[in-house]
Image (cartoon, rainbow, N blue to C red; front, side, top):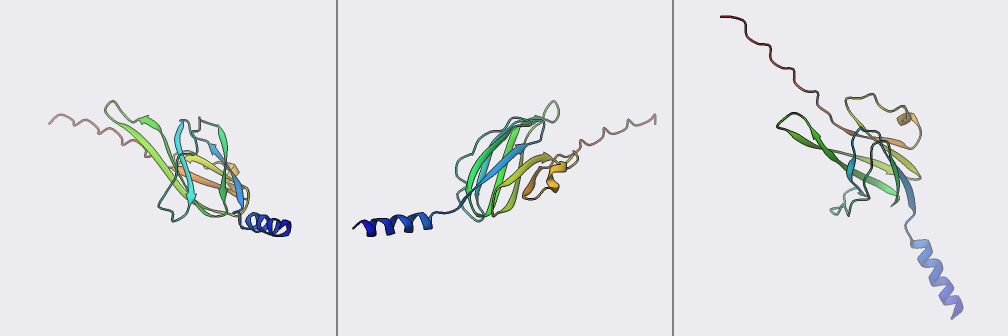
Length: 138
């Protein structure tokens, strides 16, 4: 009986998915209000893994494999009439510990993106359109 129980425990431990740590880093100037980390192709994104203040980090655990990451930032005031809630997403190959850096497209890429197992997820920031020049006298 004990051998059977020991074999069952070894079987269950051997079938457990390998979980890896993903360090999520916010290098934007605004808070990230929700972050979803889930297997690529999954219809269920699951619940948010947390929030991130500017320049803050959190760690999450995720099973190995291709992983999708989506994030939504706090609202940004574009002008007197317009607010925008920016989103960003990316896919990473998770084979071990990884770092994901959220950053904005209108700023230089973080130098840390050159390090192994470090991935960037970019919030697209459109530059404001220039004001039209006033028409001269007719």
